[in-house]
Structure formats: C-alpha cells, structure tokens
Length: 157
Image (cartoon, rainbow, N blue to C red; front, side, top):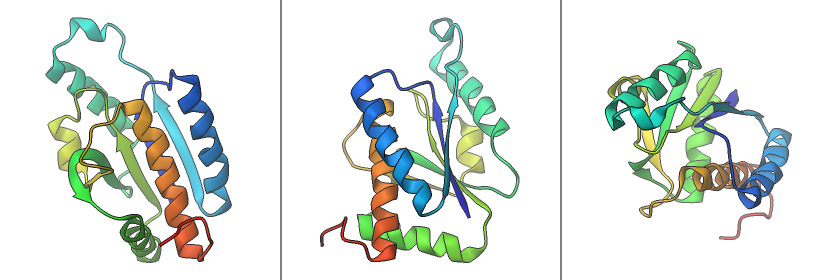
C-alpha cells in the first residue's frame, strides 16, 4: 500500500518546512509515501469561499484515482489516539487497497464533491491548526503510527 498526503499550497514557514522534511525522510523507511502539493488558486481573493472550495475540489479530484481510498483531515472528523490511528492504518494495509490518500484542504475546507468522494474524515485535534501546521502534525502522527506497528520505542504509552 502507498500513502499519499495531498495539500493545497506550499509550506511558507521555514520552521514548519524543516520539521516536515524530517518526517518526510523517516516515513518511507516503513511504507511508500508521497506528499503532493497542489498549487494555490490564482486570484483566489476574487472568489467567494464556495467558489474557492469548488476550484480546490476540482484540483484535488484530478489527483484521485478511482481505486484510491480518500480520507479528509477535517476538524469535524473522528478523533483517535495515536494507537487507534496505528490500528486504523494496519487495517487499511491488510485490506488490499493500493493507495490511501489523506487531504489537507484549503482555508475554507472542502467542497461538497470532496465530502461525497471521501470514505471518512479524521480530526487531528479538537483545536484548530493552520493548514501548514496540520501537514507537520499529520506527518509526525503517521511516523508515530508506523513505529507503533513495528513495536519501536518512539511512542511511549
């Protein structure tokens, strides 16, 4: 199985980029992984929130294959512990799907088309984080989950 993380726009903050690079190097030791950056929409300031979500949704759907299983990183999603997330990943690995895709949306969330296509929503916290911070938090949690599955000492219970 391969895991993909789709994000809208580049990571601007150097400290977040540096942290993200650490985990983007570690995760592939455990599983095939890629992070794809979908460029910010040009002239987004001239669009309504709904128009921006629709355009971003179209760009996201262009990256999704029919066989992919899609999960949205969404503040209204299911909350799980790191161990629960590891178990979730393990079930997906054993299910035979080829690619598991997680998406961090734009500043206004996701369009209805994206919600319809998704298999589910996952919340990283009840708190709200910037979309750029979510990338780093997700990458760290993915790494943590993979080390839990391997029985490695990164995660302390």
